[in-house]
Amino acid sequence: MQDIAVVHRADQHELENYRDLLRALSIPVFSLPQQLRHGWEQNGNTIVFHMWPSGTQSHLKEWAVEKWIGLANSLLASGDYSFVLTGGREDVAKCETVLAALPQSLRSKFTSRAGSSFAETLRLLQQAALLVSVNTGIMHIGAAMGVPTVGLHGPTNPRRWGPIGQRTRSILSSNKGAGTLNLGFEYTAETDYMSGIDDNEVVMACRELLKG
Image: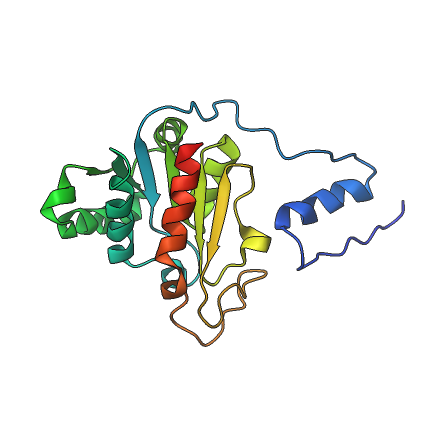
């Protein structure tokens, strides 16, 4: 038996760190991961908003509700879309609060599917025109399915933890301390990471992906 040391690098995506383990065993790695068997079907006009991150200090990864509402208004200016909010059971009440805060002009355009099963969420993503998500598991799942995905990053570094795929875009905040998370615990003293995300940059990324 021979020990092999593999360096865990902070200058590359976490996926590449896992691939390095395979390379150390002389297992060839040539391409991006295969998309999930039930991949994106490229139809429909539903845009999924996944607003709620999970994990330690998750509130620091949340984008303000008014920003999501502004994004919806901007996208509706260029297309007839409907919007679905997703999340876990713990996010049901928060999604209902968002629906209650919507201006009258948007209420018919929004529904919440928070609390749905994992299988139901996959089916929803499969038929979505676009996924906009904070940095959390659903963002990676959507990207792996081939769903056009915009990832919103505050403390997380998209170079390390962004969505992977040709139909993905990552938007990083310009605020102090943004993009500093490497292993997930290196939070700075800052408490506002997400407000530095450029609204116009998000809109442009969404429109680009919606055009195909």
